[in-house]
Image (cartoon, rainbow, N blue to C red; front, side, top):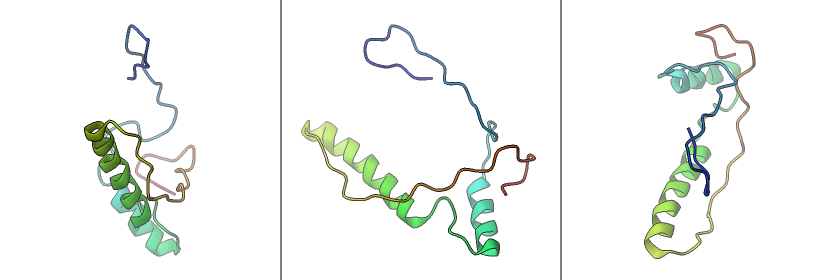
Length: 90
């Protein structure tokens, strides 16, 4: 659900891809498979740092009422392939 400025009501965002249910453990599964495949896993350390930077910057921006320029960036990970069978990540 989301609500943009000026909207009266919340709007629903359709889920267009797989893994719509609670998929706890998918990150660990992806990490294990990435070790086998010799690739970087999707939730890599640079992304974790960037997400933390975003969260901290939101709080700092709110507290100081100033625009915060992020000090980090990361490469967007590849999405999971379309049409996967439930329980598979590649």
